Image (cartoon, rainbow, N blue to C red; front, top):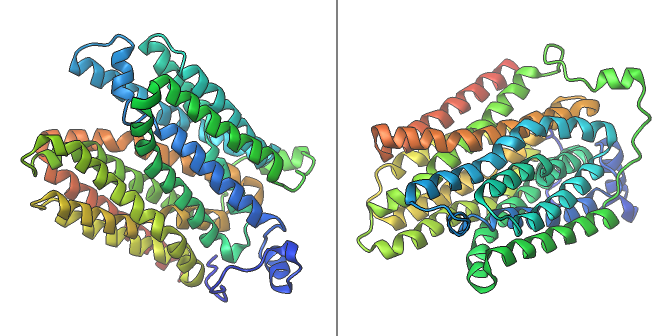
Length: 427
């Protein structure tokens, strides 16, 4: 399973250039001649979609209030519902889109997602009440999934011993979108208003739709026969390496729980560390951005390292490092200590999702790769939903420091599960 043997140190030339090395990679290692161009287009599309979807974060409570909701508690509740329902719906439908990608092609799913979210963003700019806002955010969860589909496309097209690097680069695009989106939303909303910001988002995603339609190439899908249709049905009882695949899905879930259990309480944590309340929101934004920045910088390098030494070893090391870095975060005495530790944590955890995706891709047959990766994506969305619930419950019941400590224990437990699977495979 491991792609560590003989992995090149530098990016190989694209197979379309006629290089013998690239031709070997594209053929023997499972890559396609146009994998690198598809990667760069998908990278832009992922970044654009994440920027557009995350623009709403700074002003969602403002929009809820503009739609007629009053009272801090009610605004908070409706904002939380409108934010979380997108990820909840995405978790439900991701396996469906993954299976459809196996049967109809990954490019079709990219086009569906980008065009669908374009329409949703336009409609979000036209809603007249908070119920319509929640419904459209739910529809965004159902129709979205560009990042998940792009991950499946890149994972199935990149040469096997370059999949870690390619997925790491794509992960950097996701992190860049999460970094830029809230910042851009905070800048645009005072200038052009909430509704205007949604329209800018729609234009950005539509550009990604155009580039996807014109530049991404995919092999023609084989004709679907009764035999091939039966082959695309995931059977967990007969799935190759199912213990490893399950460990990877658990890892993806734990990563998102670790991130999302902390981020919603950061404002409260920082509020207890600073005297000037006017700086709390700014410092919370810096802390969140520091994590995303660390992950964005480190993801390609850790993906390349996984290609060389084995992706599961990177997963284990990242989980242990992330778990250990959470412990001092429970005991910081000023906000800048937290900024530094969250940056280091971003560096440590950057390799997880690319490595998880690479391992799953190399562990299952091509015919069901999209289906299994779709379930893995659902595990990530489930972590995004569960994380804030865990953080809110633990922080409210036991204190904020226990959120860091319990999350640390979860990551280290995940490392032990992965270590057991690694030893069971004799690696």
